[in-house]
Amino acid sequence: MPTAPDALSLTLGLLAFAGLLAAGLWAPTAWRVWRHRRLAAQPFPPAWRSVLRRRMPLMQALPPDLQLQLKRRILVFLAEKPFIGCHGLEVTDEMRVLVAAQACLLTLNRPGEHFAGLRQILLYPSAYWVDRREGDGSGVQHERREVRAGESWVQGQVILSWPDVLAGAADPGDGENLVIHEFAHQLDQARGRATGAPYLGERRRYARWAAVMGREFATLRARVAAGEPTLLSPYAATEPAEFFAVASEVFFERPQDMAAAHPALYTELARYYAVHPLSWH
View 1 (cartoon, rainbow, N blue to C red):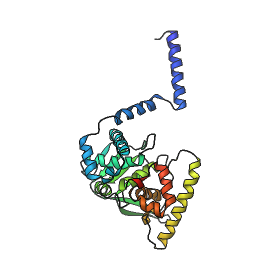
View 2 (view 1 turned 90 degrees about the vertical axis):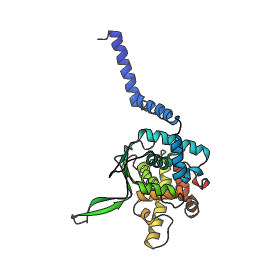
View 3 (view 1 turned 180 degrees about the vertical axis):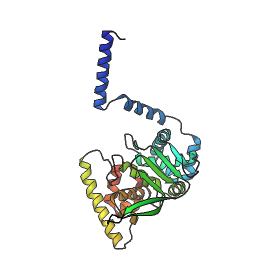
View 4 (view 1 turned 30 degrees about the vertical axis):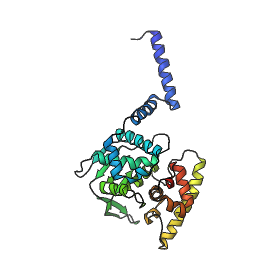
C-alpha cells in the first residue's frame, strides 16, 4: 500500500494524464506517431520493388521524392492493415503490395494518419455476387442479385476483386482504377456515411468544394441524361459519393483530360490530394 506522499504523487500523475487525454495529447497518439516513423524507416524489400516495377507502371512515372514517400507509406500500411482472402483465395505479398501502393497514392503529401478506421481488406478471386433487398416505395421489399468488383463499408472494410486490382494498376491511363475508387470512398467515410464531401480540415474550404463539386455533378447528370459523351463514367452521375470516387480515378489516371475539360474540378481535387498528376504523365 503506498505511503501518503506516494499516493499524492500517484493522484497528481493521474490528474496530469487525464489532462493530456482531455487535450488530445494522450500517450497512444504519440506512440502511434513514433511507431509509424519507425516502420517507415525500414528498408523496402527488393521483392516488393519488383512487384511495383512489373505491375504498376505509374510508380515509375512518379518523381523520386514521391516514389520514396509512397514506399514509406506502403510499409506502414502493410504493417497495420490485415488482408483476408475470400472464396479460397490465398493472399500473397504481391496482392498486398499492389493494393497498398494504389491506396497510398491518395495520401501522398498529406500529413496525418489516413484510413485510420480501416480494419481489413477482403480480396476475392473474381467479381462476386451480393444479395440486396430494396423497397419499391409501396412498402414491398424485393430481393435482387448484383455482381460487384469492389465495395467500401463505413464499418472499416474494403472489398476488392483481385483481377480488377491487377487491371487497374496495369493501365494507368484508362481512368479506371478500382482501388483508387474504393479508397476514395474510405476517405469520404472517415467521419460517417459517404456524401461526396470528405474531411477538408478548414471550414472555409467546404464552401468552395460544394460550389465546384455541385456544379460539376449537375453538369454531368445533365449530359448523361441527354446521352452526350462524358469524360467521367455515367456511374458518377448516380450520387455525389460516386461522383467523388470516379472523379478521383480520372484525376490520378487522366489528369490532362480532366484539366482540359474540367479545370475547376482538377484544381479542387489537386488541392484536396495535394499532388499534381499532370506532371507525372
